[in-house]
Amino acid sequence: MTDQAAPPTIVVPASADLSQPHKLTRGRRIAVWALILVASIIGLVSVLTIWVNRQMLNNDSFTKASAQLVRDPEIRSALSVYLVNQLYNNVDVSQQLENQLPSNLKPLAGPVAAGLRQPATDAVAFLLSQGRIQQIWINATQVAHEKLVNVLENKTGHGIDTGNGVVTVDLSQLVRELGTSLGLPASALAKLPANTGKFEVMRSDQLKAAQTGVQIIRYGSAFILILVLALYALAIYLAKGRRRETLRSVGWAFIVVGVIVLVIRTVGENYVVNALTDPAYHAPAHRVWLIETSILGELGRATVIYGVIAVLGAILAGPSHVAVSIRHWLAPMLRERPGISWGILGFVYLLVILWGPTHALRTLWGILFLGALLALGFELIRRQTIREFPDATFAHATERAKALGAKASAMRPKSKASPAEEIARLNDLHKSGALTDEEFAAAKARALA
Image (cartoon, rainbow, N blue to C red):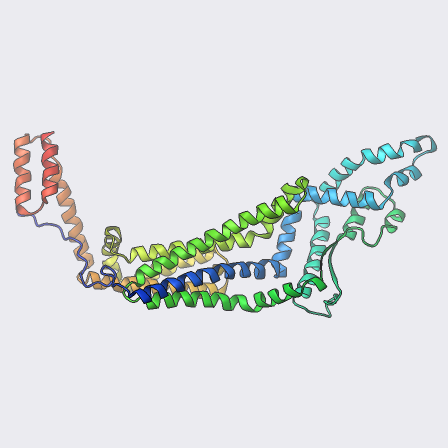
């Protein structure tokens, strides 16, 4: 044991750029931070425009949201109250009952009509849980949404004139279906006013500013996103000598933007639900807000995830002891088995794509773009690792593991040895260089304990 060699240690070359970051001039440092700040502000706007484009202006997304709305118990309950109110406000239910009751029971028509209001509401709530009735709701909201988008995009010839058109949600068919289900005669339902079950969303002559905004969102959201990424890339490029630190700052900027988006969603909910809706409808309004802003929440979470990945990548490439140890452990594989390394990375990325935690990973452009960034980052770390540990091989790693195991075995006290014999053994290991001063002192203290 006295001639045991000391195990290999991790040595990072002093010339490594990432462990010895250069100082930026004051002007360049200001420029880098200004670019990150501007890109983050524009990025926040970009996230909001993408949400409007994907959820508010996309008919497929809107239709899916409508289906979620009518399948939500809280919203069905509120909708049933509205529909029953529409029936009672536009049909003299008491008179209809009086016409059908025998002469001696006609005085009971009024109390019976009032007493039927709540059971009717419950019955409507049940009917709204049925697939056929739900489809009527989905079709009605889908048509209204198509008209709304036509107005916002200033289109004509689609059933609405953007000069004096009115966008409404037409639930009149649903009101009639429910009236029939409740036993009201067809003659009474035929006399319903034309505006029964219809409520105005907005007028086209009030949408000049909205139309301009929608045009910008439709055609500018992709450009805004590209601009944001370009500004971040420019900031990293200008930070020569401190690009890893700048990448880490960009990652934190992504996290901050994502958190702000989630805060906006929460604050917006509080304002819309508390300030713009009747207290009796706070619960369903809360559900409506969550459904209609689901994509906004997804965008916020995705932005945070991308930021965390960027920060972790920057830390992995850094000079910390943990990062260097990880690179040293990976060095043999990255150096001697690059094909296997790339294969493992590709397999993991394929699993992430199949999972699809973000919208970008469910689109072709997003898969290709994020895959390219991942490949670039992996190759940079691989080359850095090879430069730092040019002699790292699997044989070297095996020898190091054996040396560490022998060292751990040597530091374990011999059960039958006296304290003096154990200290003598440790002293021999210390002199041979197998134990450092600190390790020798700690082992000696254990032997004397």
